Image (cartoon, rainbow, N blue to C red; front, side):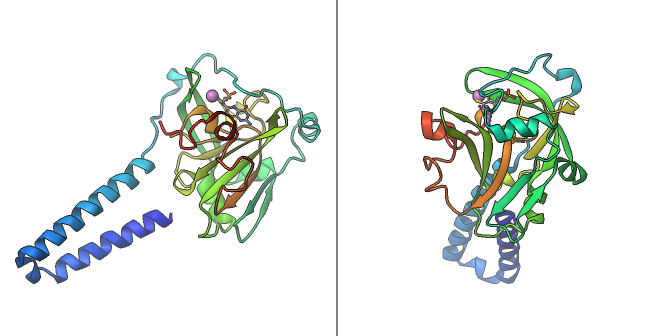
Length: 249
Ligand SMILES: Nc1nc2c(c(=O)[nH]1)N[C@H]1C(S)=C(S)[C@@H](COP(=O)(O)O)O[C@H]1N2
Ligand SMILES: [Mo]
């Protein structure tokens, strides 16, 4: 959001400059500076455009007959087991950190807001892919509703599960957080998200690899830095296996 706003301001600024300064462009020195400026603006634009481009979307005919389960398939935490036992009726998604209005949302509330459905390909670093249909709450509007601070640089997803006592977590930057295909999915292939696939809610951040697609999301936290959080590298696999934090595809 900030990026887009800033880019629009830049473009508007450049337009104003060009019309007001037509007469001075006769000077070769000025022309050279303008050309450099144009190049900088173009490459800046390309960067922004690439990060905001949509991941390919498919049709129902392309859905994988089987979508593998990977990583944890049943969180062991007693709190999670209790939520599972009563169909996640008392489960709440906490939204906190650098927001003006912290939220605690039930599944029904998440489903009542804006929704997006997308058929996308999931790519796991371990060498498999699967196409699935996901429905969920777009993250951007949710964060705006919570009054996200301009100081927020990352969104952290805290999960219910762990590996040997190390909690699973992930994080993305604001470009991905506000990307239109970034959703909190509660529905997969038109069925409520199953426990093995991350019930009740998982992240879909479609421009990145499988390990970024956090399952069992319990809390979302807006932060200014990832330093000091768990291993400091922004995610469970990033901390423990040297996987890249930015897993763009
Ligand atoms: N909470 C949590 N999220 C997770 C994992 C996990 O073990 N725990 N595994 C990751 C990996 S490596 C992949 S490929 C996908 C697998 O999602 P799936 O089980 O729905 O196929 O979830 C990702 N998100
Ligand atoms: Mo994965």
